[in-house]
Length: 215
Image 1 (cartoon, one colour):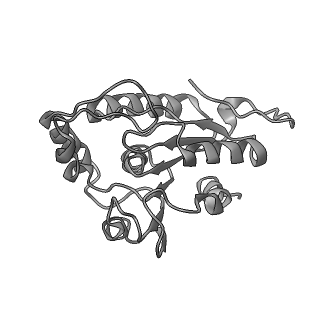
Image 2: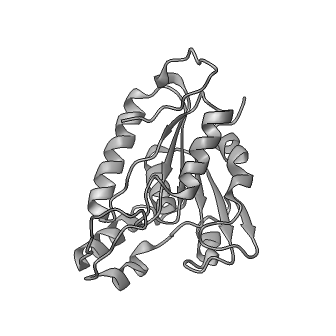
Image 3: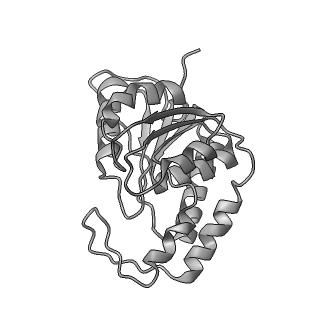
């Protein structure tokens, strides 16, 4: 279930006691996304002690919530090291949803705050993953209703620790909504850029330090 980083430098710590970084990709994306692979490669080179887990997330909210909730619940029960979340776009929403339940730190990159608002535009259409998967998805009105239920679960004051990374040039999501939602949390909001968050590599080291601070 876990994808372990490998390195020429051996790590004697059991996997269950090492830091665990969970990366959650965006809507119709995959663990093969640029940011996910970039972070995975950086960890392999510079922080091989960190266990990296990046699941393939269903675009169907009920399925995604069940799978992600089960995985993190299992980690919370069995993993004895620190756990941190990072997610982009829709993955930012899922990171927040999970962080609130399990009191985990999370870095959210151009996150979707209320996904149910843009989901109706996709209802009834054949949706193909950006990753090139052959599978086709089709959302139904019930999926929008489910997403609204999930959003309501994090409608109150945020209980976890967040770092918002956003770019005002995001052509898909209005970052002002994220700025308001994560008010009071650490925020880095840049002018320009786009939804992919240009220059993400600049923040990999700081992202890891935020999730797993040295004491």
